[in-house]
Image 1: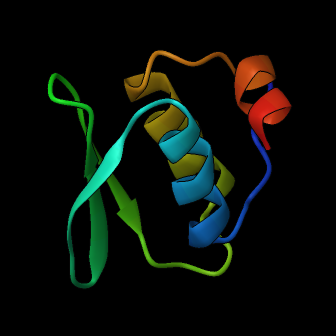
Image 2 (image 1 turned 90 degrees about the vertical axis):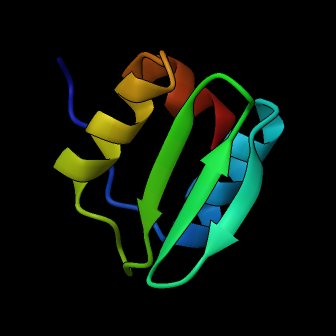
Length: 70
């Protein structure tokens, strides 16, 4: 599986918002939900590429689909 780039947490929030995820709550991490799936995004700059890959996989996105949404 090709790696995803390490990106800023605000860019990750923007990508998942395009897919219908909404911010449920914020603190040290940002929790986003679409009603069925919950994603936890750390407030990092940048978010580690391995972590970003796991978050995208939880949202059922391939690395290519994620890159297109950036």
